[in-house]
Each structure stands twice: as structure tokens, then as C-alpha cells.
Image 1 (cartoon, rainbow, N blue to C red):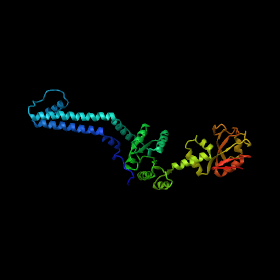
Image 2: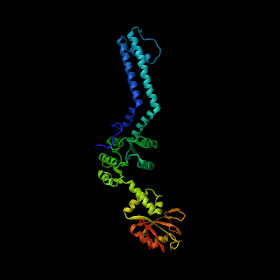
Image 3: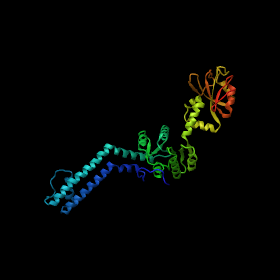
Image 4: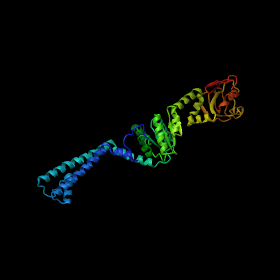
Amino acid sequence: MESNQTIIGAQEAENSQIARYAISTPLRRILIGCVLFLMVCLVAVAGYMAAGWRLDDAVYMVVITIFGVGYGEVQPIETSGLRALTITVIIAGYGAVIYTVGGLMQMAIDGELNRAMGARRMTKGIKQLRGHTIICGMGRLGTILARELHASDQPFVAIDSDLERLQDAEDRGYLVLHGDATEEEILEQAGIRRASAVAAVMSLDATNVFVTITAREMNHDVTIIARGENPRTEKKLLGCGADSVVLPTAIGAQKIAQLITRPTAESILQKLQYQGTMLDDLGHIGLQFNEFEIHFDSDLAEQAMSEIEIRGNHAFLVVGIRRADNSIELNPQPTMILNPGDTVIVLGHQNDLPEIARRFLLKQPKMTYRGASVRT
């Protein structure tokens, strides 16, 4: 499968993050310096042995020459060839040592060693995960999702090609992986075969389609939840293997509409967790939250909450009450007194809500029902 993006850097093994740091400038300098130092030592030893020295004398001479111990010469150096060799050993040996030490200092300054060790710990942590979630994309939606999963103690791995986003996620204590989530190698490193869910929440619908296809091919049992910006993409994502599709724009529009048409009900629901999903699920089974106000001329004014249940024949559920001072009371007791100006939030069948309004509201009954005012 061809990807629509180009992965940054070659990553072929599960330790690819360490390999990426291994080719960075400081580590490359250390590697080159060590190779040069070894070559200088081997050439110098070979040169002294070519002049008739024994191996142990040649090695000893090279060591005391490069490290400047100051001991006397093992054997007299009288020929110009041996003198030239010794001078070369001093200059080249010191140069290789200085070059290597410079790489070590740069590594310490740049924090390369800490990052390499962190990458090793990160890879080890990902290998230990089982039944985790893979978040593909750490944009606004991915960041919120990661925060919610972290708060719920749900294990997850965050994948993104933006190093700044990953650094912020790593600072929060998340397990992160740098790369392109559409690539099989990256998903393999994230433990796709051991994961329980994949969240494709990147900004481009096409990218989420590719992630969905790749994840489904690699794990037929994983649950895939994909983000879609264009409603027409929903069918494509489901056809590619996504189990569920979330349309943030549509959900946001529905939320705004609910705040306009049922402001009091929404203020109650904001105190409940996952209210967006709950409202959608209730709507599928024909239930809906609505509200009505206790007017001064209503015969429910100054009556107990139990009066509502008796008159409603238990055809609905009273969820809460907003008092005239805007205080909210959830799960009201049957003995609670209703005062003029109170707003009662009820949960009932959509088709029964107009009838409920007629039962309880007198003279000037008014109720918000699907955005329209209902009067009797």
C-alpha cells in the first residue's frame, strides 16, 4: 500500500527512535573519533613492528606516546622514519582524542544522551502494553483524547510526525512514537497487534482513511474509531473498516442548537459526564430531555414534587430543577416543594412531551419542544 505522506527518517526496527539519535551529529562525531583513534593505534603498532620491534614494545610505545605519560623511549628512535612515525602518532592520536571528546561534550550540552535513554525507555514501555489504545494524531482532538484516557488510567500510545507535539505529550508523561501512522512499521512499533482500539483523529480525512485501512489489515479484531470532517467521508471510513466515525463539526453544531433550544436542560447535562454521547443514544431510542417552568398561576406552584409524578402517571422522569436563583438541584426528592419561577427538567418519550406540558401548565402553559413553543 502506498502512503499519502513521506515518513521522516528511515525506521525499520522497533528501536528506530534510538537509531535516529545514533546518526545525530554528536554521536556521529564520537563514532568517527573512535574509529580514527583505533586506526592510528593500529597503523602505529604496525609501523614500529615493521622497524623490528616486538608487539608488546610497539603497543607500549603507542600508549605512552599518545597519552603523553612522559616515560622514556622503549628503544632508541634514531632513524628519520621512526621519528616521522612518532610525530604522526602524537598529532593524529591527540586529534582523534580531541575530536571524540568534543562529540561527548556536545552530546552532554544538547541532551542527546538523555533523549537516547528516554527513547529506549519509551520503546520498552510500549512493548509492555496490552489492550491499549493507539492515538493517531496529536492535534487538538488527539490532545483532548489523550488527556481523557490518561485521567481514566487507560493505557495508550500517541503517534505524530510533529516533534513539538510529541515533546509536549512526553512532558505530560504519555508514551509517544514519532512517525507516520499510515505506515505499517510505525503501527507495528505501537503494538497494533496487541491493541484494543485505534483512534484515527488526524485533521485530514484522507489520512484517517489510510490509517483505518492499514490498521484493519494488521489487526482484524481491533476497534477503530475514526474522525471525519466531511460528512460524506463517514461512509468511506466505515467501508474501509472503521467501527465508528465521529464528526466533530456535526457534534458541535448539535451542541450549539441544544444550548439555544433547551438552555436549562443543557446546563443540567453539563454537570454529567459524556453528555454528548448520552443524548445521542437517548435520541435513538425515542427519549429526549425537555423543560417547563412553574408559573405563578400554575396549580403546581407551592406543591410537592410528588404531585408531578402522580399527574404524569409516571410516564416520565424528573431529572433536576433549576431554582429561580439559577441554583441547580439534581435528583430532587418527592417532598421537595416547587416554587413559582422554578424550571423542571424531565426525561420522556418525544411524542409524549406535548401531552406532558398540557397536564402540568395552566392558563399560560409554555414549553420548549424541539425548538418550538408549545401552548395549551
